[in-house]
Length: 323
Ligand code: KG4
Ligand code: ZN
Picture 1 (cartoon, rainbow, N blue to C red):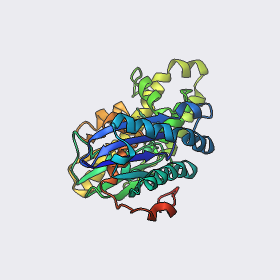
Picture 2 (picture 1 turned 90 degrees about the vertical axis):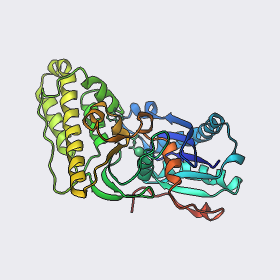
Picture 3 (picture 1 turned 180 degrees about the vertical axis):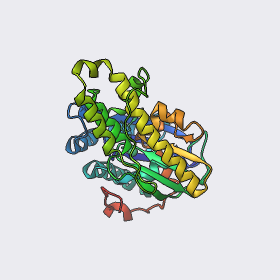
Picture 4 (picture 1 turned 135 degrees about the vertical axis):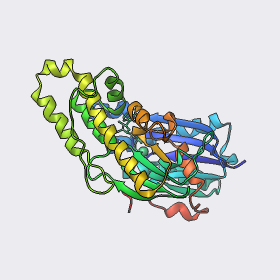
């Protein structure tokens, strides 16, 4: 049985996971740093790097323990090479290189976005391409055409904020703390999504734009009395969420129509949103626990990515943005 160790440190989750060659998850360990960054209202890159450095060894050790495996049982080490915070990425990449090198194992550098898509390829319900994939996270919002498991073509992307960023910024305006997506999701359940009308920007092609929406919320909140904001916070959250979900789901359906692909999938942190999951009920949805950043999706992508043999990967660099 082939075993792959995955390591992910591109943002504020230190994660390690073990996956078999046929896509069974043996361990999925995620140490979130969200609490550490909450007081700053967003991820502080240098703070994230330092925390990754403290957490990466214990997290990898725990993943191996849970999988009942030792380094000697591994066939490859997979790691996120980019895109992400460069200092954060370098911690994971260096750790993965050291682990692979110590056992003369091959290393598999993985694109983080490919990782999100590959969260769909795991047991017990692996998805078979082709499909259109909406990838909505804190750092990205993309529509992808997925023809096979080794990659994807980009059909559209956000021109400004990512959908998760729109959730986080909206949550901040509503005084809900960071990260805000899940908080808006919870509060929205008690609110009326039609109470406020927020604009959904229609940009050409299959792209997205969320910055106008955030500004609309800002103006609405500014124009209300503080007690009214307090009283109607759930309505504001529900209406704001409705606008984001509508923008995402409409564009995704357009992409499916344009490509002629019948199957739709949704991945990334925002795929955890309950209203989006309802709106896209017919779609293949990434399992809830694999929506936000994790390392089993990285190990999963590694199964379909080129391997770099020992010791050629020692000079490999991370990249902050996709070329
Ligand atoms: O995929 P992810 O963990 O990290 C990136 O690669 O960016 O996504 C994190 C994003 C955050 O913006 C967070 O607010 C959002 O996903 N998110 C949600 C929910 N859970 C996480 N957004 C809306 N509803 C949720 N339930
Ligand atoms: Zn991500």
